[in-house]
Length: 228
Image 1 (cartoon, one colour):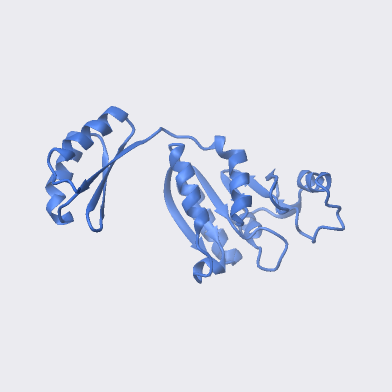
Image 2 (cartoon, one colour):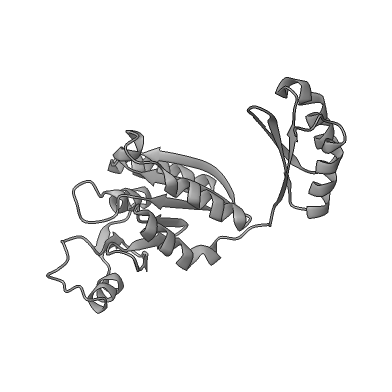
């Protein structure tokens, strides 16, 4: 299963808010064996949201969108998702009923709070007010981290892939000097190798077979100068 993550918010692009949602979702999806292949941040504009979501839903098994939910003027994510699918926004009876059962009368709610794309499945917000939604293969979650996490946990079973295994080898050599051994381990084993330079070079060996990953990491450790 491959997924794209789209985070919505002018404040993310301006650096006023750190995009912790994308990091958290990436970690949780990776733990479930799901490949996250895109992380994109877009402004609070309907056209930008619609364009990116429409592009990604054609390329990936699912698109996870966070941020921009609610009834205020800059909360336009639901409109953007609806536009991507060519659907209208409609008051969602189940979402409204759940909010009323949670103690919010219709008079308490700002107009539009329960408006979701036509045909959407509502995702209830146990940590806040604004509901999320699932429309086809698009999952729309809040931007407030506590709300996003709780809502994702309610639907995370819908994301599953082959489990992956990872081992790191830390080399005390320049990255350029390691190219021959990186090529060698990839030729001999069915693994991917990421190279992350710093004070030393972290070689991340990853694959879907635990024994193969362990053997590839051991092969590398025998052939590189290990950092202490």
